[in-house]
Length: 418
Ligand code: UD1
Image (cartoon, rainbow, N blue to C red):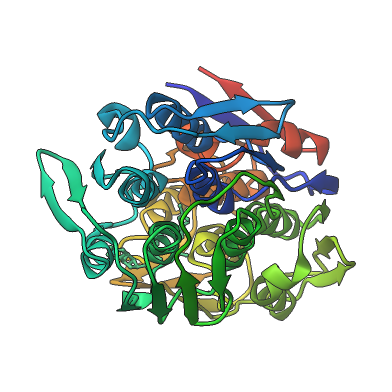
């Protein structure tokens, strides 16, 4: 099994550049295939494995999806020739759910595998399906796939349960070609939603209110291709900042939007780190022993669930007891068992982890089971004494491109091994 081999205890120092956001690129690439006219040129698209899988799904549906250089993607879909996404690809990533919204809008019919993705608890799609039904579709789940069909999609008012990010995305995609106006109440407010709205508007769509909890989408007859630059990946940026501080180092991330990291930066400061920022960069460094802080994950602009895991690794070497509450997913502390092997003192009770910080962690063979849990193990390995072997590398690769190269540029000793 492929794994990362990490020699810990070296403070990370230097500058890296954040990639484009995976969670923004997935909806935007899918939405690009809504256009029956022209071609979209998408810039700052990260080459994560989830993105490559989505591109392949769209190709098999009849879209032309081509890389132009390392992070520019050209997408054209004058016709979508199929309405069934390849099962083995679609089941791999959560973002494939957006293909249901796309196919409903373009073909009035969709068959897409119920997605897998990360092992962080049950990840149902009931909110998505309820939303499609409100727009006039019939939906059911059969033989591991979502089946959806609509002879006509009609805008309406939809309450988005739990301000679900994926549901908001999917309904924005479908409603853009539905007739009439769709109003999403309790919509997600994540920056990735705003990025998608900007892209849809560039395609000739009519989306208003993205970034607030009420989004209005006026359906249009046809969308056309456009040029768009995907926003920077706030989760990747946050991960490297946390890793820098946890190792007692100083990391600067360029191509970052500090506003998107507000709560994370506030928590780093509360833990005793120093933070500096400019319009498109942010830097954080440790300033003596880190202190315990309490965290509760929340929808944006609250503390992001995707950075909870790496932050727990940081807290496991901070002074004092931190209480970390996960309110978004029901099983997002699996990685804590691996940290315990490294000497961390963490007690998990349902959705809360009690982290008693110690002086140090020590390297051990450990196993990643999800993207962000994998990032947490990397942060732990970097700050630990001795060697850490992190198995399950493919999970980390789904959300961090060439992580070992960025870490090496920061002075870390990380390599891939068999
Ligand atoms: C997206 C992100 C993920 C991030 C999460 C929360 C992508 C590809 N993934 O995931 O990185 O951690 O937002 O910011 O963008 N739920 C249901 N039924 C549904 C849909 C969701 O019960 O049909 C539940 C989920 O299990 C979860 C909560 O609602 O408990 C919020 O999930 P949601 O915001 O939809 O997350 P994703 O879009 O899957």
